[in-house]
Image (cartoon, rainbow, N blue to C red; front, side, top):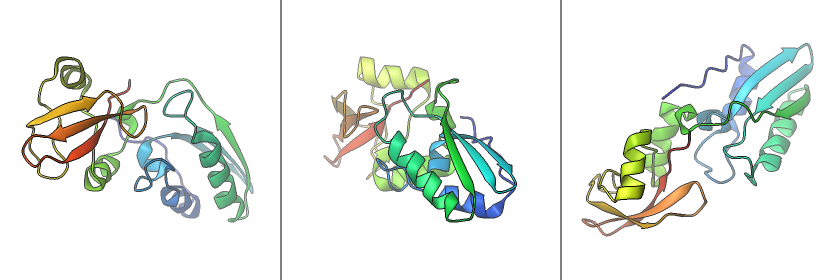
Length: 167
């Protein structure tokens, strides 16, 4: 996992970006998702580089608007640029973000080879977010969004989403 490498010297800007939620996973900030790839501040102008979780992500317009409104309210003239390369990876989700996913009931992405073993070969590697058991099985390749799979725990019988590993 790679922690979000974006350094933001302006504490108000940093705080504002950490307070903006991902519209599809409201417990995660856009910073915890790792989709903010750059912040350039030049006087009262600010440019934000934003990378979508995948190229067709329907939340990007909403996120860009939320960023612009939040930073404009701080007195900045804000531009948000979509950056497609390098492509977003689940490695960019912060450790704090992974913990929040689990607390919210979404299993955090596994490492790539383990993800494939769980999704393609049915190996019981994904931990239940309720009881912690790995006695789980995939119910559907797709959960509440395309980037998640639906799992069920065979111990506590609870269904839960698993955030697929994306590289």
